[in-house]
Amino acid sequence: QVQLVQSGAEVKKPGASVKVSCKASGYTFTGNYLHWVRQAPGQGLEWMGWINPNSGGTDYAQKFQGRVTMTRDTSISTAYMELNRLRSDDTAVYYCARDRVNYGDYQLDYWGQGTLVTVSS
Amino acid sequence: EIVLTQSPATLSLSPGERVTLSCRASQSVSSYLAWYQQKPGQAPRLLIYEASKRATGTPARFSGSGSGTDFTLTISSLEPEDFAVYYCQQRSTFGQGTRLEIK
Image 1 (cartoon, rainbow over the protein chains, first blue to last red):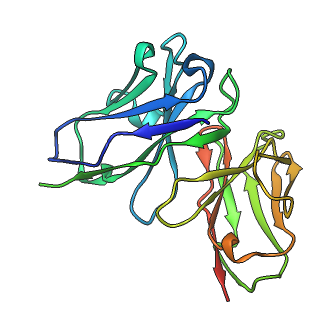
Image 2 (cartoon, rainbow over the protein chains, first blue to last red):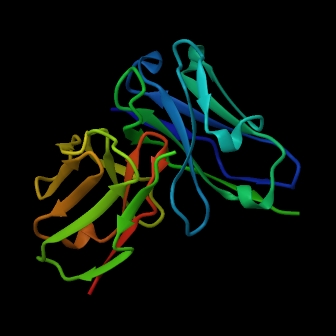
């Protein structure tokens, strides 16, 4: 069965960086784009970007351009999302989610359990 | 950038009732619209993709319709487990969500 398992909660100070991992299993890792979506406490869903695990190509939301980097390691079927220069309003649950098809149609059929990132001085 | 507006923000209903949630796009999005259900403390779950196709495991009481700018998610008879927040999504844009509460 398809599973996306994310790394554990993080507490960071403003200005620091965080790197969240997402380990995939149960399907061919390079066959589907992986997206990152975040959710601030009590708020809605916000799309951050995707990575094509096959090519390593990425597309980021304009809001995060210059601050986010998405990478992958195909040898261990794991994707990563690194967010730099953290601010208090980056406090959120960060999710990885699999694209339903292999060309990125943004319809996300499997989600990780989420990683809470808390930014606080 | 496309804006998705969901209405209403909150609905209070009883089990067994029929409910229709609305999602309106600021410009045509063809049929590439998805619906998700999210329960407290859980990740979202894909219910409907391409506006009207049920995802694997989605019960038949859920149906989606619409194209262009106006879309709806209908639950034919509410079960206790259906009380949650529902989001529509078109590519990189999510609606703000509709909260379905037990009356």
